[in-house]
Image (tube, rainbow, N blue to C red; front, side, top):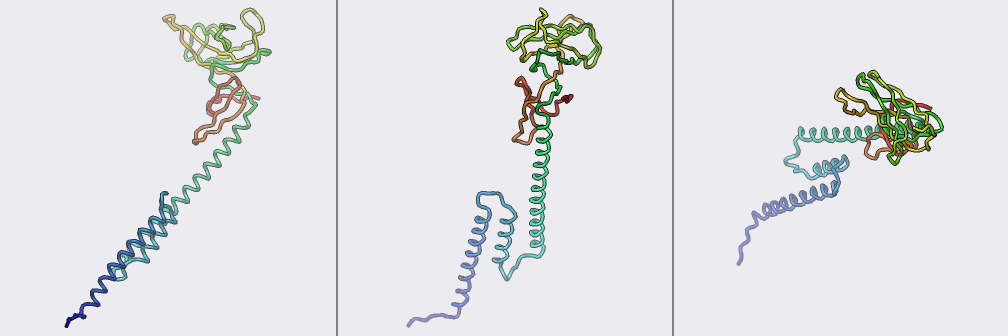
Length: 240
């Protein structure tokens, strides 16, 4: 006759149920985490889902500490605030970009003066440019070359003091003939005490033909007649 000790069956069953319950809780929490996060960064909805799942599956004999619960709520509140701040910053950035685009688009067709050595010239009328002279010099010369590199005209500006010094080209070559309209390069030079040639920066007028918006949040580019481009901040003067 078999003797069965039934005094410990209840305790054994309770222990078994406890292990099964713990395993189920862990599986539920893991599933919630996997479902909430997936392959994306954890957001406020995923955080709240994990928090609710954690509260539903906590040990009733050892509930979550009040301090820890408050800390999690504080983290959730901070996450919500950061997300709202990010949305606000994105909205401001979009508005600023739109404002800059509107401002830049108003320059299309306008003449601007910027530091460059090449521009599209209408030789039927005179063109005014300037040379940035760093210190008083005895002579400044501006050589004008066409798109093929041929020298069309050399302007002798003579002695100049420090500052922005203007020059005028009447559109004619060295023979007194009107040059063909097109893109020309202006090279300004002077001589130092040793007689060596020193390059000087030139500022020339150009017409804005279009605007290129940056896809990375950088500064917009103004496309000029003649093929060159400049940043909006490089404009020195805006004309008609």
